[in-house]
Length: 511
Image (tube, one colour):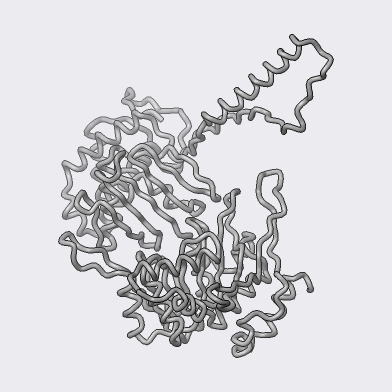
């Protein structure tokens, strides 16, 4: 799109996308991937041919293998077009933007209503375009008006990415490099910022909304957007190539277990089993790797908390979106510039016990607060939940034990394991598979202690059967044949044993 000056009366006939900032580049032609047959499928060299012919065939196979290795070592990176603007557009925009900054007082503008401020900025930009005699079509002018308004009042080039509900993560590695995650796959976009100073200003604007700051003296910051999306910023000098911004986006529509069934994350019978665990006030630990859907699953499970219960959540950055009417949300606080005033997760969990909670929900257990959460689970706060990073249910319990030990508690190993067994009822293991899909791969019950070993029992497992033509994994959730799990009596207490029995029968294929 050209933004150069043109003689008066001349109209730009080039087609322009009517949606500001969302013009798409043409998709490049797909390149054929080199064929690499399996060893058993390669054509064998007959023994009776001449030595020179053997050499020719061997050389051809070597050349083919070398070409394949070269193609794999230098893969072409596809860039997802989000904005298709020319360098001339960015130069014109920078000129108008700098003139705007010389014209308005940003301090006074911050005190004005957002709608009124946006309207005032648009009027000033229109005057600047007229004074500088920048000739452009009405569509081009509308695009540049919207972009500059987003730069001054919003999140600049990030706005079109934040508006898309199919993006799970936004990763900005300096002013010129932005990646997104869509359907579990990471891809680069052509989004860019004017310079690192603009990116740093946007980072400051994001974290200041929740009372945080990021600068050279405090270069690492965790914050959140107004919709609950998680934000992490690490600034120079720690980030060598410029400010690094990572946003874990939340969907505008809150997911429910029924949605996870539609996505194939859990089977219908498995979802009923999870709902029974939530209704029965079982203590649940959700385990999984980064991006496996732990927080989403925790949100889904909290939907089965009775509306009459008092729930207290503790998080580093408030992400949970509970729908119950009686919810108290607590958030940790980092130290100030003098190094004082920090409020840790353990401080919040300990304080929860004085707030008459019926359930305590910890967004992520990553330190000595594990000890206090286990104590809460074991002292009348049934139905408490939390998440942690681990790759299997067994590893999750080992991590809990390690976190308690690192907290400085001089307890015997057996005592810690007895506390774990007496507190945690079920571990739900989530995973992101190699095709990008997220699945619940284990629902595991904590049975007890045999000697010094914690006994675990899988109730539901996910079995991968293969993959389809598009590379998507095919599998199913299966029951392991457990007729009566340990929490059966708890389900009976809440009149849910019939529903539990039916769900287990369906998982085992008996219904």
